[in-house]
Length: 252
Image (cartoon, rainbow, N blue to C red):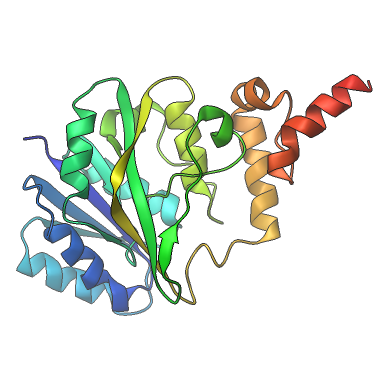
C-alpha cells in the first residue's frame, strides 16, 4: 500500500488544528503520515501540534518562521516519505473515504491529480459549486481547491509551490504548473472536502492587489500556456480575457 503524506501548514489555527488532524486520522486509508508545519504561529498551534504528535506516532511536526502557505507546504512535502501528497489547511476537513478513493484513481499513471466535491461549513454552509475542470477554464480561473491528491514526484518536477506568492492564490498557479503539459484530472463523485468559512478564511482575505500580482506572475511564468488558450494575456476581468485579446487582434 502506497504511503500518503498529508501536509498541514498551520498559522494561528490552534482552535481548529486538532479537528483537522482527527479528520485525517479517521481515514479508511491505513498507510498515512501527517506532517504539521507550524508557520510561525503566535498562538498555541505548536503546542497542540506537539501534543498530537506525542499521541499519534504518524504525526511529525516542524516549525519555521512565517513564510506563507506556499513555503510551508514545500517544507512539509520535502520531509514527506509518501509517494502521494495531500495538502490540507489547518482549518479544513476531509471525509473518511477521500484518500482511499483518490489513490484508486491514481493507480492509473495517466492521472496526475484527483479532487472531489466540496462543502462549506462554519459561518457559511452548503455545497461549493465548483466550475468544471478543463485546461481552457484553468487558464482563466481556479476550480480545484488546495486539497487535491497528487504524486510527490510531480511536485518535484515543477519546482513545488511558488514561494513568491505570499499573498495567496498559489494553489491555482501550482495546478497550472502541474497540469499544463500532461496528465488527466479526476473529480470524484463524492463530497470529500469541507472548507471552513470563518473571519480569517483565506477566501475572505483575497483583495485587488493580490489578484493583480497573481495575474502578472501567471502571465510571465506561464505565457505559452496562457496565450495558447486565451490568444493573449490574462486580464483583470479574467473571464473576458480571450474576448479582449481577440478583439484587440481584429482591430490592430
